Image 1: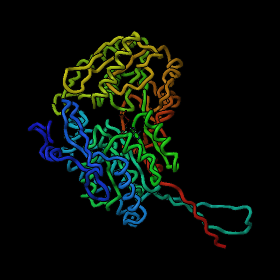
Image 2: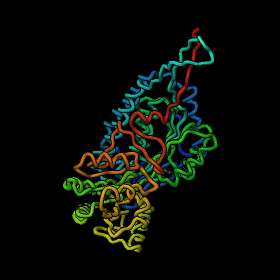
Image 3: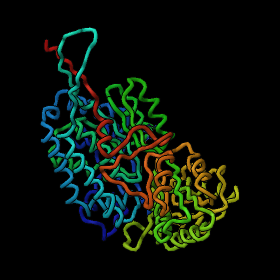
Image 4: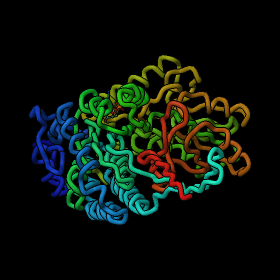
Length: 501
Ligand code: ADP
């Protein structure tokens, strides 16, 4: 293959793209049982980047078997917590030492600017693994003073253990391919689970390269299995598999609901990180020098392909024109281009499908009466580029205001006072994130209390950290990833009671 590889590509990446990529099952790199492969594309050109083994139900079967064996019989469960932590830390070190290579791979496969992949995606993934490595030795139960009124005079020693749930199936999206793999693998491995990971079909490459580092770090075979493939085949088989104890999914709310249905067969545990339509509220007393660029980057970061993107911009009336014109100015100055170009601020969308979807939303917005202060169209004829767009003259009942666009499109609306804005900000099926910009600390925290969202940012946006729990209210999901709460997704409590006398 190596079709779209130009000479300036990182040499190890060029080498990685040369051969069709295989899947990782039981510590071995193998072809799919069907022998099928699928292409992954360079979104900046629309050309094929590499061929990847196409896993389906049969490959998932083998991967689950390997993960089951590694959990039930393998050496993994016998490692001490400290040994488990050291392996995860070693993986973080290896990943860090390959930062440049992963940044290239991520930029090529997803389209995002190389500078962003290098400065954010890879270091955040490294940090997440290190954070989780530290938790292995701190997953503790409690001793509990019990009274048992129906055995008067008896004495007991009662305590709890936090034990790994078992085999975790993990299905991840294409917007932060490496980082999402880290968010999933980190807490699962720290907890002592074994894993079958299915990367998104649009962006399987960085997870597969990570698989090589996982084996190099010395994880026992079968602990991490990586099966690339399509959602309706490989993903659905994993979600429904009776020998999988837990499924963790990040993606659309629509597919999240399918995952819940698929999980009912064996009532596997489910965690979901789904869509969003996050309100970003700017009050007239805000520091506009930070609020305006903040509102722009809230929506345009990662081409708007963030589940927590600040896609509904509410601005207090007296400053509405100034703020939206400021955000539109930022939009017009964004260099849209190939992720590998150091001058690029914003890359292409991930796929033709996403480009069509975003353009469809733009048309729907215009036909319902919205107007664009910046952007509004597809850009160029090659690759999946779209202009950063600021829509005004929008109303709450419009499709572009209600639904997640997952592209660089913000809808801006004025409001009169804090009482009016809260119900409007909360009027969404989603509840992933929200932000408030104000100099009034009391107002900021009152808003934070009443906003229905798993994350509220005050005078900042898109601040994510391995130690900070992330997840959704309402239809934005179940459970929290990152922070120590992530361990709750991969462990379960056992209560042990001993009669002493
Ligand atoms: P998007 O629509 O933004 O591509 P999806 O929710 O469809 O996001 O995809 C996120 C992940 O879910 C991908 O890894 C995809 O392959 C997977 N997926 C899609 N459909 C299903 C399904 N029916 N069952 C399980 N996984 C799925």
